[in-house]
Length: 171
Image 1 (cartoon, one colour):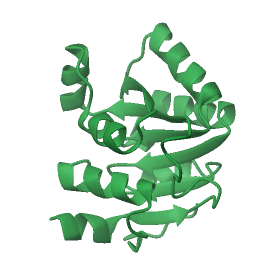
Image 2 (cartoon, rainbow, N blue to C red):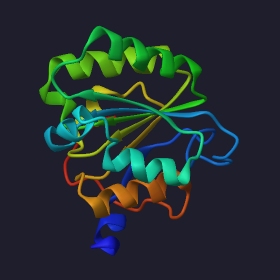
Image 3 (spheres, rainbow, N blue to C red):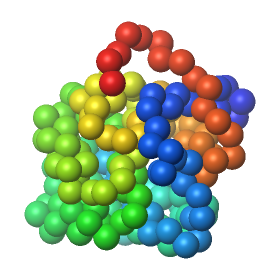
Image 4 (cartoon, rainbow, N blue to C red):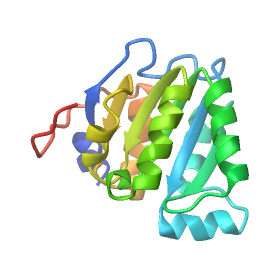
């Protein structure tokens, strides 16, 4: 499963100044994650998501904001924008954003507010077409544990993504 997940990771475009994220112990890396329904319940209990746990293990200075995929309090949205402004590198993890107008609009605004952005499309690659203005776009096609591990490994530079888009998509 690990090998298949790594083989699937697709780098659609990369800003060489951002990807892979080097010197993680010195950089201010932020994560704005649109949580899955399952992860939303975890977050509601005050715990952190699976992706956050994995990224924090590799990027010690990581700061995070998690949003529900369909609704967001004004306070949490404000925290996401604050994180976008203070991060050297902002990772935005989407889950089927192209199907949720509110998520798409918020991601586009965050990309505009942040300096250097990596959009991490966790479920399907169609999100990438909505966020062409991002400097780096990475797709995993899944948000299962092996795929999350592969995403973190790619972000950290453990391997070079070799996946290919299974569809025609302009980014």
